[in-house]
Image 1 (cartoon, rainbow, N blue to C red):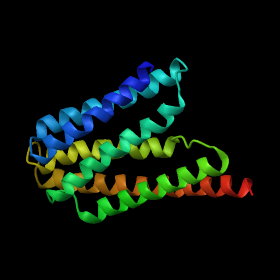
Image 2 (spheres, helix red, strand yellow):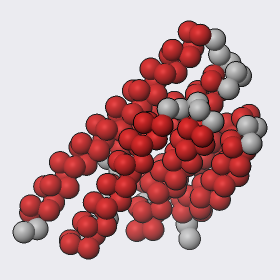
Image 3 (cartoon, rainbow, N blue to C red):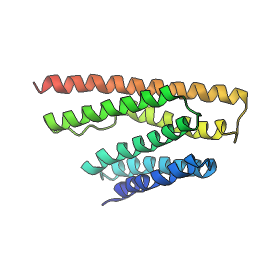
Image 4 (cartoon, rainbow, N blue to C red):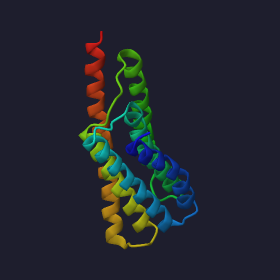
Length: 180
């Protein structure tokens, strides 16, 4: 196991702790753990590309760790009535369709789907939106104006996720039509 894969494994290990602290409304600890997860994500990607340490496991596990961390945050924030349920439903639906599409591509043409710039951008926007949502909407650093800005950022994050899904759908169609 190389350094990028170890960093991804650390992200997986952080998920239950992050979820526990977020659920128990220990928001500062949750923000710190979420930030650490984000830093490990950036580091593992940088190291893997710079030192040619990309592995098949990393191609699958890295985005999975990101999505599980995001979905954990959105689920708990929805339970606490901080994020509206439709946002969780949209993101969860997108991830389920992406998973099904990835499995189909792998079974059909042995292709492991990798993140593209739009998927990475959507992840970064959601990462920022989640941290700021936790910080502002839980009363740490907010007022009415910042609440509006956070809501706008969350909407932008959802739209970027939908854009990524649309782009991946186009790629899926290209790959499946080529393999016929």
